[in-house]
Image (cartoon, rainbow, N blue to C red; front, side):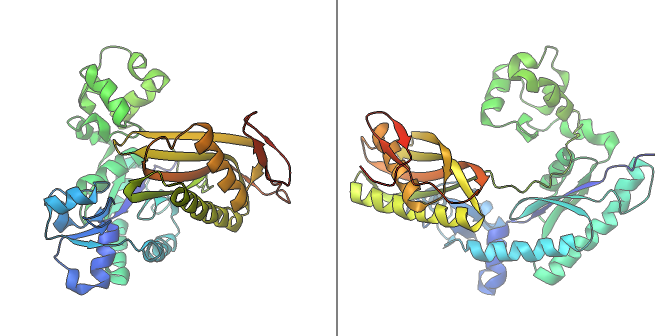
Length: 374
């Protein structure tokens, strides 16, 4: 008989802000906002639950957060510290022997199917509650942080359960209750329903998961071939396995300017720094990029991206920088001041030996493998 699936979703509570409050006891109980200064054009990376009571949320402009919560304590992100803490936390999780799919610095799916030999699916889920409670206690004891855990028979429902129970929550959703639990929730609760899909569904009068469950027509007419999967998700059915593929798909770097600028020396300096950063990451992982992309955002928040792919992958900072400059010039992206400038690479492949230096002819819009600069 097949072992019943027991999937947990572990999500650290207000992770960045919680780490700051733990490391600085004087911040406990205060509305901590990790991100840019309210006097800058930064964004909120994380907000403590004290700050969330004022309406502060991740990805919100820092200036908006400052207006909503004038007494907020704004802190510059310490990403190295958060990554270090993440390694410690998931080291504790991994030591338990369960299969782990870490999806971000502060959350992961755990497959605990083998922890209990119970053959009954509902019994297997219930048996995981004690283990989850012990894991939460271990994280609190060893790291002085709280985590929320959702338990279900698949990834979709485990994630819904952990979100529902926050903060410091532990929630089990039995198989028999999956469809009923989802029914009143917004359609965007389901995995894969982003802003665009949500708008399409709303235009068709589909606003809740229950509306998807009851939809009389063919969902393919609304969301294409994904329709049957969306229908299954709405019933709480999800066959996705845990993924162990941690391959890097892309790398990028962005700069938001304190004041819109079209100053070429400033933009070139930023691009050089970004190219150096990306090159260091590529070489550290022993990979190169076949596609280079630039991203610009203007004062009205309109955003454009342009990319170019090369036959021979590149990794050297000078090649990334030259390609970025060429893309900006070719598409005339700096025709007005920029609010943001970004550089990214994708199509990543393992290095096969020495890298070829590229240059290009603007009049032909193609790259030539040469060692000289025109």
